[in-house]
Length: 287
Length: 328
Image: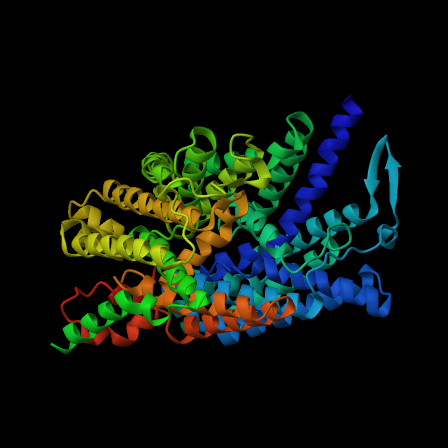
Protein backbone atom coordinates (compact mmCIF):
# COMPACT_ATOMS: atom_id res chain seq x y z
CA UNK A 1 0.00 0.00 0.00
CA UNK A 2 2.60 2.54 1.04
CA UNK A 3 4.79 1.46 -1.87
CA UNK A 4 1.86 2.00 -4.22
CA UNK A 5 1.21 5.42 -2.72
CA UNK A 6 4.89 6.32 -3.02
CA UNK A 7 4.77 5.17 -6.65
CA UNK A 8 1.76 7.40 -7.26
CA UNK A 9 3.42 10.41 -5.68
CA UNK A 10 6.69 9.87 -7.56
CA UNK A 11 4.89 9.59 -10.91
CA UNK A 12 2.96 12.72 -9.97
CA UNK A 13 6.14 14.66 -9.25
CA UNK A 14 7.73 13.53 -12.51
CA UNK A 15 4.61 14.51 -14.43
CA UNK A 16 4.54 17.82 -12.57
CA UNK A 17 8.12 18.65 -13.53
CA UNK A 18 7.13 18.15 -17.18
CA UNK A 19 4.10 20.43 -16.75
CA UNK A 20 6.44 23.01 -15.25
CA UNK A 21 8.80 22.65 -18.20
CA UNK A 22 6.22 23.23 -20.90
CA UNK A 23 4.57 26.00 -18.92
CA UNK A 24 7.76 27.93 -18.16
CA UNK A 25 7.92 29.42 -21.66
CA UNK A 26 4.34 30.64 -21.39
CA UNK A 27 4.89 32.24 -18.00
CA UNK A 28 8.08 33.93 -19.17
CA UNK A 29 6.24 35.62 -22.04
CA UNK A 30 3.21 36.43 -19.92
CA UNK A 31 5.38 37.99 -17.22
CA UNK A 32 7.72 39.85 -19.57
CA UNK A 33 5.14 41.52 -21.77
CA UNK A 34 1.68 40.66 -20.49
CA UNK A 35 0.90 38.62 -23.58
CA UNK A 36 -0.82 35.26 -23.35
CA UNK A 37 0.37 33.15 -26.24
CA UNK A 38 -2.59 31.07 -27.41
CA UNK A 39 -0.24 29.31 -29.82
CA UNK A 40 1.89 28.02 -26.97
CA UNK A 41 0.48 24.50 -27.14
CA UNK A 42 1.24 24.41 -30.85
CA UNK A 43 4.84 25.42 -30.16
CA UNK A 44 5.04 22.32 -27.92
CA UNK A 45 3.40 20.29 -30.69
CA UNK A 46 6.05 21.38 -33.21
CA UNK A 47 8.77 20.48 -30.69
CA UNK A 48 7.22 17.02 -30.49
CA UNK A 49 7.18 16.67 -34.27
CA UNK A 50 10.87 17.66 -34.39
CA UNK A 51 11.61 14.65 -32.19
CA UNK A 52 9.41 12.42 -34.34
CA UNK A 53 11.07 13.56 -37.56
CA UNK A 54 14.55 13.15 -36.13
CA UNK A 55 13.68 9.60 -35.10
CA UNK A 56 11.93 8.52 -38.30
CA UNK A 57 14.20 10.29 -40.79
CA UNK A 58 17.58 10.10 -39.07
CA UNK A 59 17.13 7.49 -36.35
CA UNK A 60 18.25 9.99 -33.72
CA UNK A 61 17.25 9.78 -30.06
CA UNK A 62 16.53 12.55 -27.56
CA UNK A 63 20.13 13.75 -27.44
CA UNK A 64 19.85 14.77 -31.06
CA UNK A 65 16.22 15.85 -30.84
CA UNK A 66 16.46 18.17 -27.84
CA UNK A 67 18.99 20.65 -29.25
CA UNK A 68 17.35 20.65 -32.68
CA UNK A 69 13.90 21.25 -31.22
CA UNK A 70 15.28 23.98 -28.95
CA UNK A 71 16.84 25.83 -31.88
CA UNK A 72 13.80 25.37 -34.14
CA UNK A 73 11.21 26.58 -31.65
CA UNK A 74 13.48 29.41 -30.45
CA UNK A 75 13.68 30.57 -34.08
CA UNK A 76 9.92 30.27 -34.38
CA UNK A 77 9.59 32.35 -31.20
CA UNK A 78 11.85 35.11 -32.53
CA UNK A 79 9.98 35.15 -35.85
CA UNK A 80 6.61 35.30 -34.08
CA UNK A 81 7.87 38.16 -31.96
CA UNK A 82 9.18 40.30 -34.81
CA UNK A 83 6.44 39.56 -37.34
CA UNK A 84 3.40 39.51 -35.08
CA UNK A 85 3.68 39.96 -31.32
CA UNK A 86 5.70 43.18 -31.43
CA UNK A 87 2.81 44.79 -33.27
CA UNK A 88 -0.14 43.38 -31.37
CA UNK A 89 1.18 43.78 -27.83
CA UNK A 90 0.44 47.49 -27.93
CA UNK A 91 -3.14 46.82 -28.98
CA UNK A 92 -6.05 45.63 -26.86
CA UNK A 93 -5.89 42.26 -25.14
CA UNK A 94 -8.34 40.93 -27.72
CA UNK A 95 -5.86 41.59 -30.51
CA UNK A 96 -3.40 39.34 -28.68
CA UNK A 97 -5.96 36.55 -28.47
CA UNK A 98 -6.93 37.07 -32.10
CA UNK A 99 -3.33 37.17 -33.35
CA UNK A 100 -1.91 34.30 -31.31
CA UNK A 101 -4.98 32.13 -31.91
CA UNK A 102 -4.64 32.77 -35.65
CA UNK A 103 -1.00 31.74 -35.33
CA UNK A 104 -2.13 28.61 -33.45
CA UNK A 105 -4.51 27.63 -36.26
CA UNK A 106 -1.84 28.36 -38.83
CA UNK A 107 0.73 26.13 -37.12
CA UNK A 108 -1.75 23.39 -36.16
CA UNK A 109 -3.13 22.96 -39.65
CA UNK A 110 0.25 23.32 -41.30
CA UNK A 111 1.26 20.29 -39.24
CA UNK A 112 -2.04 18.60 -40.12
CA UNK A 113 -1.53 19.25 -43.80
CA UNK A 114 2.09 18.16 -43.80
CA UNK A 115 2.13 15.24 -41.34
CA UNK A 116 -1.48 14.04 -41.56
CA UNK A 117 -3.92 13.58 -38.70
CA UNK A 118 -2.73 10.20 -37.42
CA UNK A 119 -1.12 9.81 -34.01
CA UNK A 120 2.61 9.13 -33.96
CA UNK A 121 4.51 7.57 -31.09
CA UNK A 122 8.19 7.01 -30.45
CA UNK A 123 9.42 3.55 -29.33
CA UNK A 124 9.63 3.04 -25.54
CA UNK A 125 13.16 1.71 -25.83
CA UNK A 126 14.49 5.04 -27.09
CA UNK A 127 15.17 6.20 -23.53
CA UNK A 128 16.27 3.03 -21.80
CA UNK A 129 12.96 1.37 -20.88
CA UNK A 130 12.29 1.36 -17.13
CA UNK A 131 14.00 0.43 -13.88
CA UNK A 132 13.03 -0.27 -10.26
CA UNK A 133 14.51 1.65 -7.35
CA UNK A 134 13.47 1.04 -3.72
CA UNK A 135 10.38 -0.82 -4.93
CA UNK A 136 9.26 2.07 -7.14
CA UNK A 137 9.17 1.65 -10.89
CA UNK A 138 10.65 4.47 -12.98
CA UNK A 139 10.22 4.88 -16.72
CA UNK A 140 13.37 6.20 -18.35
CA UNK A 141 11.60 8.64 -20.66
CA UNK A 142 9.61 10.19 -17.81
CA UNK A 143 12.61 10.43 -15.50
CA UNK A 144 14.60 12.15 -18.23
CA UNK A 145 11.74 14.58 -18.97
CA UNK A 146 11.14 15.25 -15.28
CA UNK A 147 14.82 15.81 -14.49
CA UNK A 148 15.36 18.07 -17.50
CA UNK A 149 12.12 19.90 -16.66
CA UNK A 150 13.31 20.60 -13.15
CA UNK A 151 16.73 21.65 -14.43
CA UNK A 152 15.49 23.98 -17.15
CA UNK A 153 12.89 25.73 -15.00
CA UNK A 154 15.45 26.29 -12.25
CA UNK A 155 17.92 27.54 -14.86
CA UNK A 156 15.36 30.00 -16.24
CA UNK A 157 14.62 31.16 -12.71
CA UNK A 158 18.32 31.71 -12.00
CA UNK A 159 18.83 33.56 -15.28
CA UNK A 160 15.92 35.87 -14.52
CA UNK A 161 16.80 36.60 -10.91
CA UNK A 162 20.59 36.29 -10.66
CA UNK A 163 22.15 37.49 -13.92
CA UNK A 164 22.64 40.87 -15.56
CA UNK A 165 20.64 39.80 -18.61
CA UNK A 166 17.82 38.72 -16.34
CA UNK A 167 17.83 42.07 -14.58
CA UNK A 168 17.64 43.82 -17.94
CA UNK A 169 14.73 41.65 -18.97
CA UNK A 170 12.89 42.34 -15.73
CA UNK A 171 13.61 46.06 -16.13
CA UNK A 172 11.95 45.98 -19.55
CA UNK A 173 8.95 44.14 -18.16
CA UNK A 174 8.60 46.66 -15.33
CA UNK A 175 8.83 49.76 -17.50
CA UNK A 176 10.07 49.56 -21.07
CA UNK A 177 10.50 53.32 -21.47
CA UNK A 178 12.52 53.72 -18.29
CA UNK A 179 14.65 50.73 -19.27
CA UNK A 180 15.28 52.29 -22.66
CA UNK A 181 16.49 55.48 -20.96
CA UNK A 182 18.96 53.33 -19.01
CA UNK A 183 20.43 52.04 -22.26
CA UNK A 184 18.54 48.76 -22.52
CA UNK A 185 16.94 47.92 -25.84
CA UNK A 186 13.44 46.69 -25.01
CA UNK A 187 12.90 44.94 -28.33
CA UNK A 188 16.13 43.02 -28.03
CA UNK A 189 15.23 41.87 -24.52
CA UNK A 190 11.72 40.89 -25.57
CA UNK A 191 13.05 38.98 -28.56
CA UNK A 192 15.46 37.25 -26.20
CA UNK A 193 12.55 36.32 -23.93
CA UNK A 194 10.75 34.77 -26.93
CA UNK A 195 13.90 32.89 -27.88
CA UNK A 196 14.36 31.55 -24.34
CA UNK A 197 10.69 30.65 -24.03
CA UNK A 198 10.81 28.97 -27.44
CA UNK A 199 13.90 26.96 -26.54
CA UNK A 200 12.36 25.75 -23.28
CA UNK A 201 9.13 24.90 -25.09
CA UNK A 202 10.97 23.04 -27.87
CA UNK A 203 12.92 21.01 -25.31
CA UNK A 204 9.68 20.20 -23.51
CA UNK A 205 8.08 19.01 -26.73
CA UNK A 206 11.04 16.85 -27.74
CA UNK A 207 11.01 15.14 -24.33
CA UNK A 208 7.23 14.71 -24.05
CA UNK A 209 7.19 13.03 -27.46
CA UNK A 210 9.00 10.08 -25.85
CA UNK A 211 5.97 9.05 -23.78
CA UNK A 212 3.00 10.94 -25.23
CA UNK A 213 1.31 10.56 -28.59
CA UNK A 214 2.13 13.25 -31.17
CA UNK A 215 -0.68 14.64 -33.31
CA UNK A 216 -1.47 18.03 -34.86
CA UNK A 217 -4.14 18.78 -32.24
CA UNK A 218 -2.20 17.68 -29.16
CA UNK A 219 -1.30 21.33 -28.56
CA UNK A 220 -4.85 22.18 -27.54
CA UNK A 221 -4.82 19.72 -24.64
CA UNK A 222 -1.35 20.80 -23.55
CA UNK A 223 -2.16 24.51 -23.85
CA UNK A 224 -5.07 24.27 -21.42
CA UNK A 225 -2.80 22.50 -18.92
CA UNK A 226 -0.16 25.17 -19.40
CA UNK A 227 -2.70 27.99 -18.91
CA UNK A 228 -3.88 26.41 -15.67
CA UNK A 229 -0.33 25.81 -14.42
CA UNK A 230 0.76 29.35 -15.19
CA UNK A 231 -2.23 31.15 -13.66
CA UNK A 232 -2.07 28.79 -10.69
CA UNK A 233 1.58 29.63 -10.12
CA UNK A 234 1.18 33.34 -10.65
CA UNK A 235 1.81 35.37 -13.73
CA UNK A 236 5.42 35.76 -14.73
CA UNK A 237 6.81 33.61 -11.95
CA UNK A 238 8.87 30.71 -13.30
CA UNK A 239 9.28 29.35 -9.79
CA UNK A 240 5.51 29.64 -9.33
CA UNK A 241 4.99 27.59 -12.48
CA UNK A 242 7.37 24.96 -11.12
CA UNK A 243 5.58 24.72 -7.78
CA UNK A 244 2.16 24.78 -9.46
CA UNK A 245 3.27 22.13 -11.97
CA UNK A 246 4.44 19.82 -9.18
CA UNK A 247 1.25 20.37 -7.17
CA UNK A 248 -0.93 19.71 -10.21
CA UNK A 249 1.06 16.61 -11.13
CA UNK A 250 0.77 15.12 -7.65
CA UNK A 251 -2.89 16.07 -7.25
CA UNK A 252 -3.68 14.50 -10.62
CA UNK A 253 -1.89 11.26 -9.78
CA UNK A 254 -3.36 11.04 -6.29
CA UNK A 255 -6.91 11.77 -7.39
CA UNK A 256 -6.62 9.32 -10.29
CA UNK A 257 -5.50 6.70 -7.76
CA UNK A 258 -7.88 7.53 -4.90
CA UNK A 259 -11.02 8.77 -6.67
CA UNK A 260 -10.79 7.50 -10.25
CA UNK A 261 -9.03 8.56 -13.44
CA UNK A 262 -12.05 10.40 -14.90
CA UNK A 263 -12.15 12.83 -12.01
CA UNK A 264 -8.49 13.84 -11.97
CA UNK A 265 -9.05 16.82 -14.28
CA UNK A 266 -12.17 17.85 -12.38
CA UNK A 267 -10.25 17.98 -9.11
CA UNK A 268 -7.40 19.96 -10.68
CA UNK A 269 -9.78 22.54 -12.17
CA UNK A 270 -11.70 22.89 -8.90
CA UNK A 271 -8.42 23.37 -7.06
CA UNK A 272 -7.39 25.98 -9.62
CA UNK A 273 -10.60 27.98 -9.28
CA UNK A 274 -10.29 27.81 -5.48
CA UNK A 275 -6.72 29.09 -5.61
CA UNK A 276 -7.79 32.02 -7.79
CA UNK A 277 -10.69 32.72 -5.42
CA UNK A 278 -8.38 33.06 -2.40
CA UNK A 279 -5.28 34.37 -4.20
CA UNK A 280 -6.36 36.10 -7.44
CA UNK A 281 -2.73 36.67 -8.38
CA UNK A 282 -1.85 32.97 -8.17
CA UNK A 283 0.50 31.27 -5.74
CA UNK A 284 3.59 33.38 -6.36
CA UNK A 285 2.36 36.19 -8.57
CA UNK A 286 2.80 39.85 -7.89
CA UNK A 287 -0.39 41.33 -6.50
CA UNK B 1 -28.81 59.98 -45.16
CA UNK B 2 -26.37 57.74 -46.98
CA UNK B 3 -25.95 55.71 -43.83
CA UNK B 4 -29.68 54.96 -43.68
CA UNK B 5 -29.72 53.99 -47.35
CA UNK B 6 -26.84 51.58 -46.88
CA UNK B 7 -28.40 50.12 -43.73
CA UNK B 8 -31.77 49.78 -45.45
CA UNK B 9 -30.21 48.03 -48.43
CA UNK B 10 -28.40 45.61 -46.14
CA UNK B 11 -31.59 44.83 -44.20
CA UNK B 12 -33.46 44.14 -47.46
CA UNK B 13 -30.58 41.95 -48.63
CA UNK B 14 -30.68 40.00 -45.36
CA UNK B 15 -34.44 39.49 -45.77
CA UNK B 16 -34.34 38.28 -49.38
CA UNK B 17 -31.06 36.33 -49.20
CA UNK B 18 -32.77 32.88 -48.99
CA UNK B 19 -34.82 33.72 -52.10
CA UNK B 20 -31.64 34.64 -53.99
CA UNK B 21 -29.95 31.35 -53.19
CA UNK B 22 -33.08 29.16 -53.26
CA UNK B 23 -32.19 25.79 -54.73
CA UNK B 24 -28.57 25.91 -53.54
CA UNK B 25 -28.64 24.03 -50.20
CA UNK B 26 -25.01 24.87 -49.44
CA UNK B 27 -25.75 28.59 -49.54
CA UNK B 28 -29.09 28.29 -47.73
CA UNK B 29 -27.26 26.49 -44.93
CA UNK B 30 -24.41 28.98 -45.04
CA UNK B 31 -26.75 31.92 -44.46
CA UNK B 32 -28.25 30.25 -41.41
CA UNK B 33 -24.82 29.37 -40.03
CA UNK B 34 -23.54 32.92 -40.44
CA UNK B 35 -26.51 34.20 -38.45
CA UNK B 36 -26.06 31.55 -35.76
CA UNK B 37 -22.39 32.45 -35.43
CA UNK B 38 -23.34 36.11 -35.25
CA UNK B 39 -25.87 35.42 -32.45
CA UNK B 40 -23.21 33.67 -30.35
CA UNK B 41 -20.55 36.30 -31.00
CA UNK B 42 -22.99 39.20 -30.41
CA UNK B 43 -24.03 37.64 -27.11
CA UNK B 44 -20.37 37.35 -26.14
CA UNK B 45 -19.85 40.95 -27.24
CA UNK B 46 -22.04 42.27 -24.40
CA UNK B 47 -19.60 41.19 -21.71
CA UNK B 48 -16.43 40.68 -23.75
CA UNK B 49 -16.68 43.69 -26.03
CA UNK B 50 -18.66 46.34 -24.18
CA UNK B 51 -17.58 45.53 -20.62
CA UNK B 52 -14.12 44.40 -21.72
CA UNK B 53 -14.23 41.21 -19.64
CA UNK B 54 -12.69 38.75 -22.08
CA UNK B 55 -14.37 35.43 -21.34
CA UNK B 56 -12.81 32.49 -23.17
CA UNK B 57 -15.24 30.09 -21.52
CA UNK B 58 -18.55 31.06 -23.06
CA UNK B 59 -18.97 27.52 -24.35
CA UNK B 60 -20.31 26.82 -20.84
CA UNK B 61 -23.47 28.71 -21.72
CA UNK B 62 -23.58 27.46 -25.30
CA UNK B 63 -23.35 23.90 -24.04
CA UNK B 64 -26.00 24.49 -21.36
CA UNK B 65 -28.36 25.75 -24.04
CA UNK B 66 -27.68 22.85 -26.39
CA UNK B 67 -27.95 20.25 -23.64
CA UNK B 68 -31.11 21.81 -22.15
CA UNK B 69 -32.77 21.54 -25.54
CA UNK B 70 -31.79 17.92 -26.06
CA UNK B 71 -32.47 16.87 -22.47
CA UNK B 72 -36.12 18.04 -22.50
CA UNK B 73 -36.51 15.87 -25.59
CA UNK B 74 -34.64 12.80 -24.33
CA UNK B 75 -36.01 12.77 -20.80
CA UNK B 76 -39.42 14.43 -21.16
CA UNK B 77 -40.25 13.98 -24.83
CA UNK B 78 -40.81 17.70 -25.37
CA UNK B 79 -39.76 19.46 -28.57
CA UNK B 80 -36.13 20.63 -28.18
CA UNK B 81 -36.93 24.32 -28.58
CA UNK B 82 -38.91 24.08 -25.31
CA UNK B 83 -35.55 23.63 -23.59
CA UNK B 84 -34.37 27.06 -24.75
CA UNK B 85 -36.01 29.09 -21.94
CA UNK B 86 -34.86 26.50 -19.43
CA UNK B 87 -31.30 26.77 -20.75
CA UNK B 88 -31.45 30.57 -20.54
CA UNK B 89 -32.67 30.47 -16.94
CA UNK B 90 -30.01 27.95 -15.96
CA UNK B 91 -27.36 30.00 -17.73
CA UNK B 92 -28.32 33.15 -15.86
CA UNK B 93 -28.04 31.23 -12.59
CA UNK B 94 -24.77 29.67 -13.70
CA UNK B 95 -23.43 33.07 -14.78
CA UNK B 96 -24.12 34.36 -11.28
CA UNK B 97 -22.34 31.37 -9.73
CA UNK B 98 -19.31 31.64 -12.04
CA UNK B 99 -19.31 35.42 -12.26
CA UNK B 100 -19.22 36.29 -8.57
CA UNK B 101 -15.82 34.70 -7.96
CA UNK B 102 -14.24 35.11 -11.41
CA UNK B 103 -15.26 38.67 -12.29
CA UNK B 104 -13.09 39.88 -9.42
CA UNK B 105 -10.08 38.70 -11.41
CA UNK B 106 -8.45 41.13 -13.76
CA UNK B 107 -7.24 40.81 -17.34
CA UNK B 108 -5.80 37.49 -18.35
CA UNK B 109 -6.63 35.85 -15.03
CA UNK B 110 -10.34 36.21 -15.76
CA UNK B 111 -9.85 34.66 -19.21
CA UNK B 112 -7.89 31.75 -17.75
CA UNK B 113 -10.45 31.15 -14.99
CA UNK B 114 -13.29 31.03 -17.54
CA UNK B 115 -11.31 28.51 -19.60
CA UNK B 116 -10.84 26.36 -16.51
CA UNK B 117 -14.55 26.49 -15.62
CA UNK B 118 -15.54 25.54 -19.16
CA UNK B 119 -13.10 22.63 -19.17
CA UNK B 120 -14.42 21.54 -15.78
CA UNK B 121 -17.97 21.47 -17.11
CA UNK B 122 -16.86 19.68 -20.29
CA UNK B 123 -15.15 16.91 -18.31
CA UNK B 124 -18.14 16.59 -15.97
CA UNK B 125 -20.57 16.41 -18.89
CA UNK B 126 -18.59 13.60 -20.49
CA UNK B 127 -18.88 11.54 -17.29
CA UNK B 128 -22.62 12.15 -16.86
CA UNK B 129 -25.01 9.34 -17.82
CA UNK B 130 -27.88 11.83 -17.79
CA UNK B 131 -26.18 13.86 -20.54
CA UNK B 132 -25.24 10.84 -22.62
CA UNK B 133 -21.57 10.77 -21.56
CA UNK B 134 -18.86 11.20 -24.15
CA UNK B 135 -21.21 10.09 -26.97
CA UNK B 136 -23.58 12.98 -26.39
CA UNK B 137 -27.30 13.06 -27.13
CA UNK B 138 -29.41 13.38 -30.27
CA UNK B 139 -32.71 15.17 -30.84
CA UNK B 140 -35.79 13.69 -32.55
CA UNK B 141 -34.81 11.63 -35.60
CA UNK B 142 -38.23 12.08 -37.19
CA UNK B 143 -40.24 15.27 -36.76
CA UNK B 144 -43.40 14.61 -34.72
CA UNK B 145 -44.97 18.06 -34.85
CA UNK B 146 -43.97 21.35 -36.39
CA UNK B 147 -42.55 22.37 -33.00
CA UNK B 148 -39.70 19.91 -33.45
CA UNK B 149 -38.33 22.37 -36.02
CA UNK B 150 -37.21 19.71 -38.46
CA UNK B 151 -37.15 21.26 -41.90
CA UNK B 152 -35.93 19.98 -45.24
CA UNK B 153 -34.11 23.21 -46.04
CA UNK B 154 -32.19 25.61 -43.83
CA UNK B 155 -34.36 28.57 -44.85
CA UNK B 156 -36.82 28.40 -41.91
CA UNK B 157 -33.82 28.37 -39.57
CA UNK B 158 -32.45 31.36 -41.44
CA UNK B 159 -35.52 33.42 -40.61
CA UNK B 160 -35.68 32.20 -37.00
CA UNK B 161 -32.02 33.09 -36.51
CA UNK B 162 -32.49 36.43 -38.26
CA UNK B 163 -35.34 37.32 -35.89
CA UNK B 164 -33.29 36.33 -32.82
CA UNK B 165 -30.26 38.24 -34.06
CA UNK B 166 -32.37 41.32 -34.79
CA UNK B 167 -33.82 41.18 -31.29
CA UNK B 168 -30.39 40.70 -29.71
CA UNK B 169 -28.81 43.54 -31.69
CA UNK B 170 -31.79 45.77 -30.85
CA UNK B 171 -31.37 44.98 -27.18
CA UNK B 172 -27.62 45.60 -27.37
CA UNK B 173 -28.25 48.91 -29.14
CA UNK B 174 -30.70 49.93 -26.43
CA UNK B 175 -28.20 49.01 -23.70
CA UNK B 176 -25.38 50.74 -25.56
CA UNK B 177 -27.25 54.03 -25.56
CA UNK B 178 -28.53 53.77 -22.02
CA UNK B 179 -27.03 54.16 -18.58
CA UNK B 180 -25.74 50.61 -18.47
CA UNK B 181 -23.85 51.06 -21.74
CA UNK B 182 -22.01 54.07 -20.35
CA UNK B 183 -21.25 52.18 -17.15
CA UNK B 184 -19.87 49.21 -19.07
CA UNK B 185 -17.65 51.37 -21.25
CA UNK B 186 -16.43 53.24 -18.17
CA UNK B 187 -15.55 49.91 -16.54
CA UNK B 188 -13.74 48.82 -19.68
CA UNK B 189 -11.73 52.06 -19.85
CA UNK B 190 -10.68 51.98 -16.23
CA UNK B 191 -12.48 50.02 -13.60
CA UNK B 192 -10.86 51.99 -10.80
CA UNK B 193 -11.91 55.31 -12.28
CA UNK B 194 -15.44 54.00 -12.84
CA UNK B 195 -15.70 52.85 -9.26
CA UNK B 196 -14.40 56.11 -7.91
CA UNK B 197 -17.18 57.89 -9.82
CA UNK B 198 -19.78 55.72 -8.14
CA UNK B 199 -20.35 52.98 -10.71
CA UNK B 200 -20.91 49.73 -8.85
CA UNK B 201 -18.67 47.91 -11.28
CA UNK B 202 -19.06 44.43 -9.81
CA UNK B 203 -22.84 44.55 -10.18
CA UNK B 204 -22.83 45.83 -13.76
CA UNK B 205 -20.16 43.40 -14.89
CA UNK B 206 -22.30 40.63 -13.44
CA UNK B 207 -25.45 41.93 -15.18
CA UNK B 208 -23.59 42.00 -18.49
CA UNK B 209 -22.22 38.51 -17.88
CA UNK B 210 -25.67 37.08 -17.05
CA UNK B 211 -27.31 38.71 -20.05
CA UNK B 212 -24.51 37.53 -22.30
CA UNK B 213 -24.76 34.02 -20.87
CA UNK B 214 -28.52 33.87 -21.47
CA UNK B 215 -28.21 34.71 -25.16
CA UNK B 216 -25.20 32.46 -25.67
CA UNK B 217 -27.36 29.69 -24.23
CA UNK B 218 -30.11 30.56 -26.70
CA UNK B 219 -27.55 30.22 -29.50
CA UNK B 220 -26.72 26.77 -28.13
CA UNK B 221 -30.40 25.72 -28.11
CA UNK B 222 -30.85 26.96 -31.67
CA UNK B 223 -27.71 25.09 -32.70
CA UNK B 224 -29.20 21.90 -31.32
CA UNK B 225 -32.51 22.47 -33.11
CA UNK B 226 -30.68 22.80 -36.42
CA UNK B 227 -28.06 20.06 -35.99
CA UNK B 228 -30.04 17.71 -33.74
CA UNK B 229 -27.00 16.49 -31.86
CA UNK B 230 -24.56 17.61 -29.18
CA UNK B 231 -21.60 15.98 -27.44
CA UNK B 232 -19.20 17.43 -24.84
CA UNK B 233 -16.76 18.69 -27.48
CA UNK B 234 -19.33 20.40 -29.74
CA UNK B 235 -21.13 21.85 -26.71
CA UNK B 236 -18.47 22.78 -24.17
CA UNK B 237 -15.23 22.57 -26.21
CA UNK B 238 -12.76 25.44 -26.04
CA UNK B 239 -13.01 25.98 -29.80
CA UNK B 240 -16.65 27.05 -29.37
CA UNK B 241 -15.57 29.75 -26.93
CA UNK B 242 -12.60 30.85 -28.96
CA UNK B 243 -14.66 31.16 -32.14
CA UNK B 244 -17.04 33.58 -30.43
CA UNK B 245 -14.10 35.70 -29.27
CA UNK B 246 -12.38 35.59 -32.65
CA UNK B 247 -15.52 36.53 -34.61
CA UNK B 248 -16.23 39.50 -32.37
CA UNK B 249 -12.62 40.63 -32.27
CA UNK B 250 -12.24 40.29 -36.02
CA UNK B 251 -15.20 42.49 -36.82
CA UNK B 252 -14.75 44.80 -33.88
CA UNK B 253 -15.42 44.01 -30.23
CA UNK B 254 -17.62 46.46 -28.39
CA UNK B 255 -19.14 47.60 -31.69
CA UNK B 256 -22.77 46.73 -32.42
CA UNK B 257 -22.23 45.11 -35.82
CA UNK B 258 -18.68 43.88 -35.16
CA UNK B 259 -19.60 40.26 -34.39
CA UNK B 260 -21.89 40.08 -37.44
CA UNK B 261 -19.09 41.31 -39.69
CA UNK B 262 -16.73 38.76 -38.13
CA UNK B 263 -19.24 35.96 -38.70
CA UNK B 264 -19.80 37.10 -42.30
CA UNK B 265 -16.10 36.56 -42.97
CA UNK B 266 -15.15 33.57 -40.86
CA UNK B 267 -18.17 31.29 -41.25
CA UNK B 268 -18.17 31.23 -45.09
CA UNK B 269 -14.40 30.78 -45.06
CA UNK B 270 -14.76 27.75 -42.84
CA UNK B 271 -17.91 26.23 -44.35
CA UNK B 272 -17.14 26.61 -48.02
CA UNK B 273 -13.65 25.24 -47.62
CA UNK B 274 -15.04 22.30 -45.67
CA UNK B 275 -17.61 21.48 -48.33
CA UNK B 276 -15.36 21.98 -51.36
CA UNK B 277 -12.13 20.58 -49.97
CA UNK B 278 -12.27 17.49 -47.82
CA UNK B 279 -9.50 15.53 -46.10
CA UNK B 280 -6.07 17.08 -46.20
CA UNK B 281 -7.27 20.01 -48.25
CA UNK B 282 -9.26 21.11 -45.20
CA UNK B 283 -5.95 21.38 -43.37
CA UNK B 284 -4.60 23.72 -45.98
CA UNK B 285 -7.65 25.98 -45.88
CA UNK B 286 -7.39 26.31 -42.10
CA UNK B 287 -3.79 27.38 -42.68
CA UNK B 288 -5.16 30.20 -44.83
CA UNK B 289 -7.89 30.88 -42.25
CA UNK B 290 -5.25 31.21 -39.52
CA UNK B 291 -3.08 33.42 -41.70
CA UNK B 292 -6.01 35.77 -42.44
CA UNK B 293 -6.75 36.11 -38.73
CA UNK B 294 -3.08 36.82 -38.03
CA UNK B 295 -2.91 39.46 -40.74
CA UNK B 296 -6.04 41.23 -39.51
CA UNK B 297 -4.76 41.17 -35.91
CA UNK B 298 -1.43 42.53 -37.10
CA UNK B 299 -2.75 45.40 -39.20
CA UNK B 300 -6.18 46.12 -37.70
CA UNK B 301 -5.86 45.22 -34.02
CA UNK B 302 -9.23 46.79 -33.20
CA UNK B 303 -11.13 44.83 -35.82
CA UNK B 304 -12.31 45.47 -39.36
CA UNK B 305 -14.96 48.00 -38.37
CA UNK B 306 -12.26 50.27 -36.97
CA UNK B 307 -11.67 51.18 -40.62
CA UNK B 308 -15.01 53.01 -40.61
CA UNK B 309 -14.74 54.49 -37.14
CA UNK B 310 -14.63 58.11 -38.26
CA UNK B 311 -17.95 57.84 -40.03
CA UNK B 312 -19.99 57.34 -36.89
CA UNK B 313 -19.41 60.40 -34.72
CA UNK B 314 -22.63 59.66 -32.80
CA UNK B 315 -20.92 56.88 -30.92
CA UNK B 316 -19.11 57.94 -27.74
CA UNK B 317 -15.34 57.65 -27.95
CA UNK B 318 -15.32 54.24 -26.30
CA UNK B 319 -12.84 52.84 -28.74
CA UNK B 320 -10.16 55.29 -27.70
CA UNK B 321 -8.88 52.81 -25.18
CA UNK B 322 -8.85 50.07 -27.79
CA UNK B 323 -6.30 52.05 -29.75
CA UNK B 324 -4.20 53.15 -26.81
CA UNK B 325 -3.94 49.72 -25.34
CA UNK B 326 -4.87 47.97 -22.17
CA UNK B 327 -2.79 48.23 -19.06
CA UNK B 328 -2.51 45.02 -17.06
